[in-house]
Length: 204
Image (cartoon, rainbow, N blue to C red; front, side, top):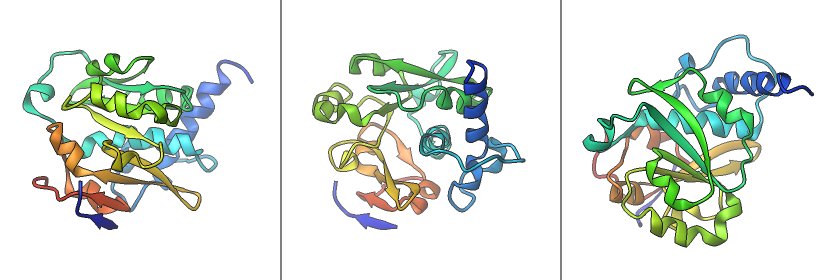
């Protein structure tokens, strides 16, 4: 870990996506994400976006949210995608039948950054990298987790950035940006990030 002290048929497609997502626990790092979120009897090697979909769900297990947000009475825990959707049915399959804080986890595609204010996690597609400054300005201090695979996302104001390490999906984190929004990234998550930007003040 590097630490930077600075800021077919319609039925077949979802079935394939679910199989890919269920096999992701073979790929995720060092047992950080429990195998209970995947089923045994894995299929072929999961795709890049199957791995990213599983990460999106599992990231939130290692984040402490502000009390007001954690007690929100909305019936669902929403993971949103802004911009080009490269996940397709893979993300929906990864989230199916899962809960966070007793709420069903659902995927939502949005077209404007303002719509993200009702999301708990926002994945910003790399297709939006030219608008990243404006998007993050809209979300300034909003208590939601921002994730992207856009270049330099973690250094440009984002919280978690997917990066490719050979043929493996890894991630960088910016704890300064997360804490500014009231989120605490736990040490278990930071330990497996390949880069940590900032000095975490809290977290178990």
